[in-house]
Length: 252
Ligand SMILES: [Zn+2]
Image 1: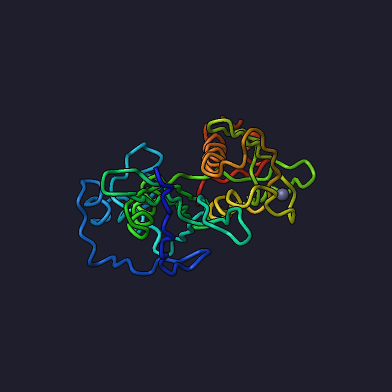
Image 2 (image 1 turned 90 degrees about the vertical axis):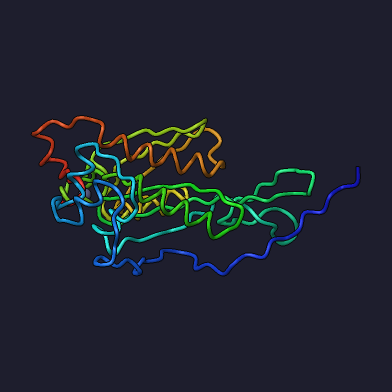
């Protein structure tokens, strides 16, 4: 069989970096689920009531309603052809299926959303074209919004302000393992580049990290990082340590 030539795909211009969503219209929003109607009526004052009671968000509008200034960032999980051979980081992960008609490309992307102050979500979406793939991922990210427990557990700092994490945590996905540790003020985010974006959207400013396994597998690495963030809320912290570590769950 002759070797097939992979056609380069024309990509739409997409702003790289943090994008703020401003198109949401609170008054014109038409909810579709029971929870959505309750939110629009004003029965729920805060998104904490939804997350703390374990209610499932099935509508992206609910998140948009509570966070009109939600920040969206597309993470680079794929690779395209770079100069002089080798791969270049890309926000689309392109895969192909061989069919009788020819190669059918699919595009996946990973999106992180957050308000930069205690809430973060991660989503993944695949479609036959680039933009619907990103839309699916953005919707998925909004539905999977979680609350981040912040604090200052660093023995070098002990300031009691929520600029870092209160305890060291461990997250894993596949063979990727990441160990996130509290860091003193001014350290910055000492983690892998894509994890940095997720942590910044969560409102964490200083963190040390160690990673193990195939940490070049970016999708798994990001998921492991989010698993670490989730672990922060699972661990029980004593009442006396609450003030000592300056623990803050979401916005109070
Ligand atoms: Zn501190």
